[in-house]
Length: 271
Image (cartoon, rainbow, N blue to C red; front, side):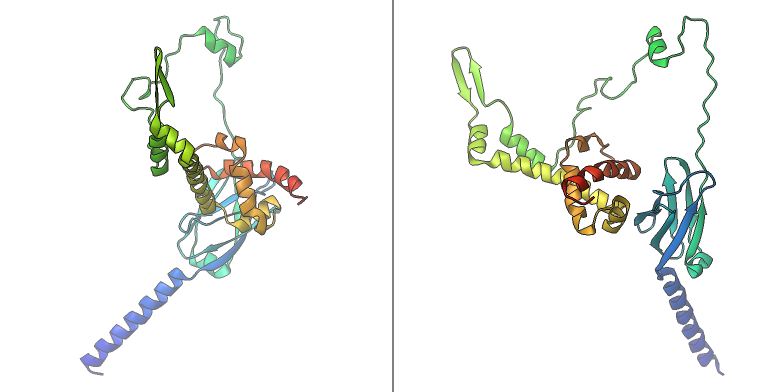
């Protein structure tokens, strides 16, 4: 074999090896597993593929399934357990099965010593007896525009259409805000309010879609997949939905959905 043939063989082997490695790295596998703990049940454990952003929840017996590929990182979390992360290796990928042991989250409280200052031992009562300095924030410092929220396009349009009082009185005289009046009469103000509300709902629903698939919500809440979109509308339009933090927390959202699922199923005959 001459040098030219050797070089061609080397190039061919290099391309073949690169293709095999690339294929193995992108080979997506449906991984099944079980989450176990010695003391408590392991249902409702949130399983998130940090790389693909896909997630699922363990069933009542602790089983789950999720798509993974080589070097993906799975995160397991719940209120009562320490968060755990596992990197997908060749061994895990080939077995397509995994067992995850979670540790119970134990909160150690510092020792509290009651000093002789006429304290009751009840924090809510005792704290009133001490002078406490307020938390320093941009608002407390009086910084300009500290509390101003950046408006969306539709929020800005609504502000322009509905800003100010409709009628201003100056002694015996009065002026009418013609722009505001015309927008109300034409229905433009109402349309813009609906757009602002729709923007908010779409933003929240998109964030929820990134966290939970319809299949995961259906299995966790006992609601048919065909009803999940309607259930999300039911939740988003519920008065207490606004109590959820603006930054979506997967565990808090799931807890909220579970509390509302009973009411939704009752109203729609899904029990």
